[in-house]
Length: 162
Image 1 (cartoon, rainbow, N blue to C red):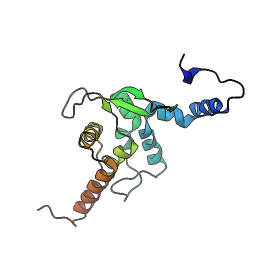
Image 2 (tube, rainbow, N blue to C red):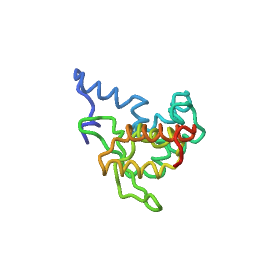
Image 3 (cartoon, rainbow, N blue to C red):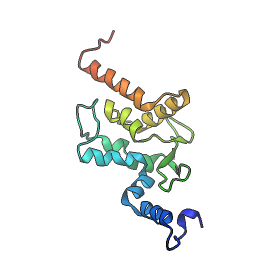
């Protein structure tokens, strides 16, 4: 039995706190679907960053959600050191244009930056760009924000094609 599964001694406040965190519904969602579990929630509540912050809901959000990632590409969960939540993802795309070996799965911010922010509903491409950014040491939030801004201004006609 692992330390995380053991019952707490009566007066162990640290252990009781760990039990409370593990029992929370938000912890269960994070463990099952990673930080991307927030995507569907934020879409329903109108808080999702869509089309470079010009919209807050998107009809294709579920295609890039943590639920979809878990159903299609999840290999296993990953826990950070000393963390009881386990929201980390190990994912793999088995075949196709964006085929990858088992890699660290994209977090919520990466999925938004390379997904809803630029209206990209291809989860495989987001997993792939997450890997490429990791390989080259590129921050996905910053790079996705820049690409989102450029894409938005291109479609507004502020940036010419040539």
